[in-house]
Image (cartoon, helix red, strand yellow):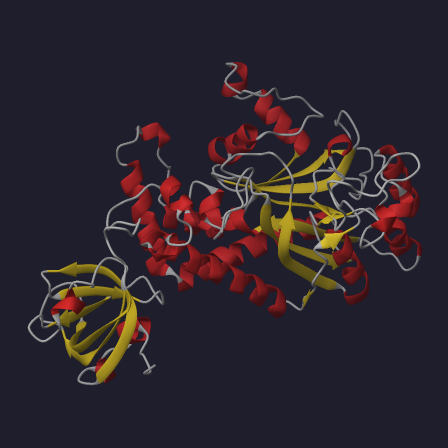
Length: 484
């Protein structure tokens, strides 16, 4: 295979290459007048115009230059005389590397619905929309590691197979090598997990947090970035059964340090994309404008995509308590007019519609809500001292809410007091014998610490402006769907 020059390299710095003979390879985006090929190789949003002399190129080759066919072209790079591009490649030879018969190929050179493209996930990255989304996804992932590395954190690989439920929710995928049609049983008729591979019930992890706490209480500052799994039957535009989570954990942090970290981290990720992926953002911004131009004005975004991202990084996040949030919601016009589907009452979790009101209507920017009722939060969250004017007991928990998607981060200061933690575990029916090691972290050399989990796909969704979380992960896993 002869050496190719990447199209991004040509477009970014073409002047030294003008007059040179180059070889390019990529997928055909368009072929006009049997002469002009728009070629893209995935390295950027841009296409290189390849000009063919149809009298010199064999007819059987010309017939195969179709939408998304993969070709190799060799020729001289020259300054373009036409509008729309600075340079073009005058092809001496064109070779078909992979044909795409338009009579059979399911993709067409026209706008196709996102629902259809999900069914063709093995081809959708070739479209402008999804190539932009997945380049930005890469950029955010890179920025995650750069942020934590540059700030002195250590990257931990926490187990994907676990014997503990960090959330206490019980909505987990079981891992087993037992014969599920005829598993071994105990004398009481229960499945005998002593005969299983790990000799105990195990599941796919819902969070690396508990193990990250081990790292934080030895190395000071750690983070995880890996896949997590939830067996929730949630068929919505905001939920996945398999998604990626970023979880920093920091010794000697309290809930306020945690909020500062969350805000700084979010702004860093967004800034990185604004600074390095302008072409992708401009394309996605224009895509949203095209989608919304026929929508009623009250259903359109208040700001464009890029404007929204700049607004987020340029302004402080609003910070309120859960009790404040409940009072704001109960005094709101939608609540008083019965517009909310779900009731607002102290002690109940906030629903997506409540979160979106706070973010999009009341404050019109990201909001951090803290100090949630203990009864609706996990056992490991630190119990607050009694708070004046608060109806019940609260924990030092926080959620970061973003426009359009609601919660993007959930975190807390962790309960470092052994006696309080034991009481909470008993109250929430979490068995001490399953988490004996977690208790020993408090018994021997414990320390105040805090951390959070950021749902990676929700952040990608926010930055790209995509309306459905299934469109920001290559192969979405949702109820009834495990294709590809």
